[in-house]
Length: 312
Image (cartoon, rainbow, N blue to C red; front, side):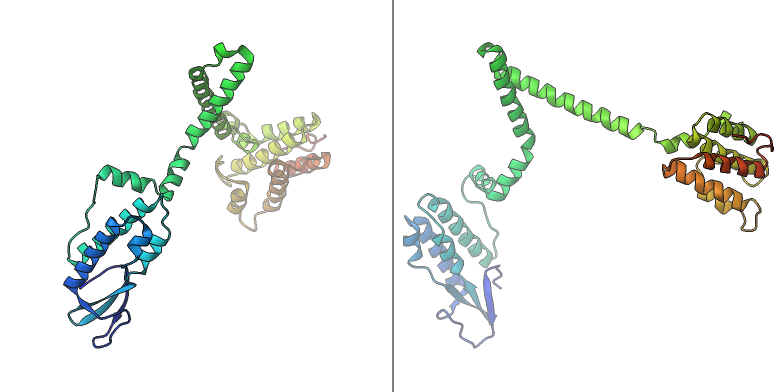
């Protein structure tokens, strides 16, 4: 059975298709070979178009198949004097492939394989791919030209050497890549304010009262943001001392809140300190003296401070 992408329709047995009398499969194969030979021997597109049919009607056993041939005329109509050799070769090769398909054979590459490859790579889609892959070379060439003009203006023709310009262009590119890598490394390893919250082992072992006194000292020194931070840590450590949890630096303030039961008497106090800490430390809200006094009052309520400690 004849199979090809150019099949236009399959018509039931007994119905005569448009485009002339039906021919058998061997005659169809001969027609393809004759048409390919006529196109290869034509001097121009007008000469090749003269004997071309619009379609072939082929009878293969119990089927009648119409094979569209209008594509040949369309390809020939686009040919110019300059492009005619390439168009002629392309159309004839396609007809040969159709003939081989009809005989059950496989398409073969005609002509020099290197020439066929070169013609394929000359297609528009391959040209775009090649242009996009060479952007770095084009950029390097532009930098070289710019450096070459600069050297000629500054030092005259003696220093206007393309080799020197290209060498410096490569060096400039390498320096730019190194600078980019250093910037990325610095950015990825930069500590944010939140990472400063992690306590080292020595700081974690300090009792809650020490952290509460640090909060008072920071408040008296005018560092109200640090006072809020130290006060919050004092509260967390105080609850550890009371057996509510074991401090984990990876735990978030909200996770600590979820560890307390809803009826725990300390929950409201810790909740107020947590909200204040999140607003000042993470939300970057400016802390006030009232915030510092609020923290000190909560720390006294939790037992971190004594009544005479909290004067700010």
